[in-house]
Length: 297
Image 1 (cartoon, rainbow, N blue to C red):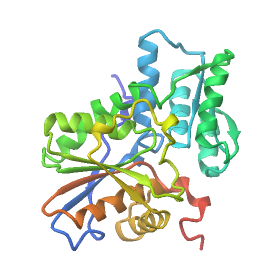
Image 2 (image 1 turned 135 degrees about the horizontal axis):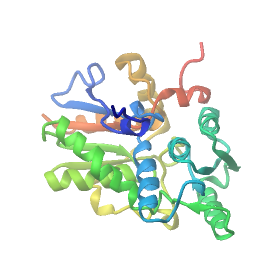
Image 3 (image 1 turned 90 degrees about the vertical axis):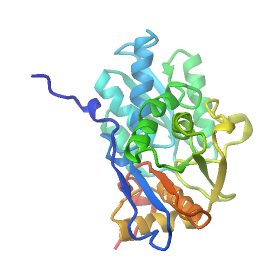
Image 4 (image 1 turned 180 degrees about the vertical axis):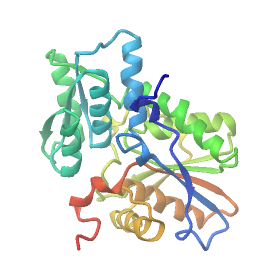
């Protein structure tokens, strides 16, 4: 008998209806629980995709050293995928991100290199490319790797279309690498061009883990602005408050960028009627316990 392996359970995550946060609306707000993936986030999908497809092309092989700049979830997912596939994983991330994320990466056997908060993700990305140039490993580069959005085109988008029976009217996703929104938008708009795609970014001055307002020179190469109908700014307070409310009112223990996506979905719901809005819950809240977003006692 052939039994499934852990990678067989990446994807096909639950799509559930919000019951209490959206009671005053004629809309249906659904959230896709990507924290149910094996390594706990939406990034499991592109992590497996990037490694599997690079193997098929002959670009990498088990035993190689892989390098990636990450704000957290991609790093954890790649650390898991590297453990499954037999790679040495070097992850580069800013030192101000939560200790839970660092610990999770190390638990899978990854090597961590920290850059300063001031260097940020831009500095982490530059260092990854510099290390590759020096022959220290191969960069997967989630920011320009088309296998990132392709994973969502082949899985996230079809799952949402299937589970809403084609009734989705709006798709809401936080934007970091933009892989989720690019691939999902492409698939959904092929099914129905009228579906509205909303990208969520932090308001000026907000620091929301996992989503960014990229300087133009660091804008992910996979990003195509034409695939996003609207961008919504969410404040730090809105993202964190909605994250807490998801836990206490819906029983959904999520990360802060997920709170931002749902906050945007709730705002959108005030503008439209009889809509079916789908938002991505991209990870779990246990990665943020040390950040102070949840009550300690």
